[in-house]
Amino acid sequence: MIERVAFIAMHTSPLLQPGTGDAGGMNIYLDRLARKLASRGIEITTFTRRADGDVDAVVPVVDGYKVVHIDAGEPVPLRIGEMKHLVGDFSDGVVEWIRANDVDFDLVHTHYWLSGIAGMRVKREFGIPMANSFHTLGKVKDRMRSASEKPSSAVRLEREQEVIRGSDCVIASTPYEFDDLLAHYGASPERLCVSPPGVDHDVFRPGDRWLARERLGLSGDPMVLYAGRIQPHKGTALAVEAFTVMEASMDDEFGNPFMYVIGGASGDQGREEMQRATDHAERAGLSDRVTFLGPVPHAILADYYRAADVVIIPSRSESFGLVAAEAQACGTPVVAANTGGLPYVIKPSESGLLVEDHDPRTYARAMQAIVEHHRFADRLGEAAVEQAKRFSWSATADRLMELYQGIVA
Ligand code: UDP
Image (cartoon, rainbow, N blue to C red):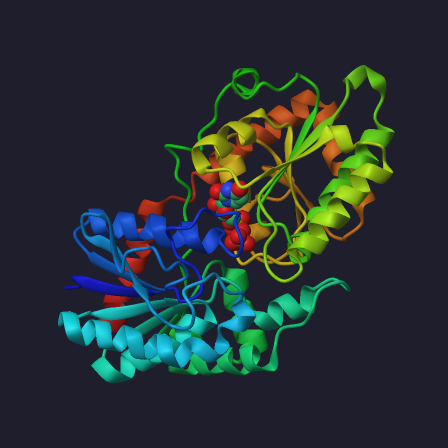
């Protein structure tokens, strides 16, 4: 029987607002899963690096789920690249905390390669099994990256390999990530498994588009939405450029299209990408029709999904793509890159459209087809709701419990 699980998420805390800095899908995953498991009586302790001197060492979130802040380096936000040399101190801190509090964990589930390194130490010290979810893989990112992106560090690539070797189970989000682990990392298939993340259907559910627009104070003109961290890998500038191309080729009879960009600059190149995105809008003379909202919490984001005619996800790679699942759950068609987990999350040509290249004109054409053809859009939207039902945090928790039980046995 599994009673207590340690989550390790060194570089980012589940308590942070996604869409801010490095916080994104992984933070949602950690938080929703911990809540779900805690509601089933499994005690979850999530260890993260202290990035704020004022935050309490231990933050109880709900009954059975707490976040523990471990001191490693200055208690200030750091970029991922600045954390590599702190893994040793962080791991010491986790081990000390577990000893001092005398907690018997049944297993450790680590998130991202940095935490995988810490998890291997915990596994050794306490003789417990370890599962790891990468959430993103350096080699996959590198294969897909755009000319403006920096490659992954050699340290990351080596360490990912070590974490794969040291894990009792590596959890891929989709069968595509499973394939990537086999093809690019030579992982052994018997220690790989698939468990997709979920969607919070209480928050992300279909609703009337015009009421959502009214609540948000938006006009009835065609609306394109981008939601996610802003960085070159996510293709934020490409999304804005595609919007400007679409706007230029649409007839006036369809009104004045506008776009919302939700989320904040993320990572080393986030600000540059934000600048590129605003430059595209400015060059097209559309600065007043592209609004950068910054990070928005889920409760409000759901209304933006409902209000939009189409959500654009032009990422270079995505291990899953929660935004695609959430938008679909709200009944909004998605135009996304045919990459990573996106063709798993979206039913190609049925619940959304997949784009093969990184050309803004291809995205523009796909979005225009949706915006101008309401019956087509409605058909995609209905299929999107059905498709999103495949993903729920309950199903994720069921699957993970099965996997946990397997590795503990
Ligand atoms: N998100 C959010 N507010 C924002 C921007 C993003 O809550 O302003 C959430 C979004 O709803 C989704 C997550 O951040 O749950 C992004 O996950 P995804 O898998 O799409 O991308 P990742 O961040 O993992 O690359």
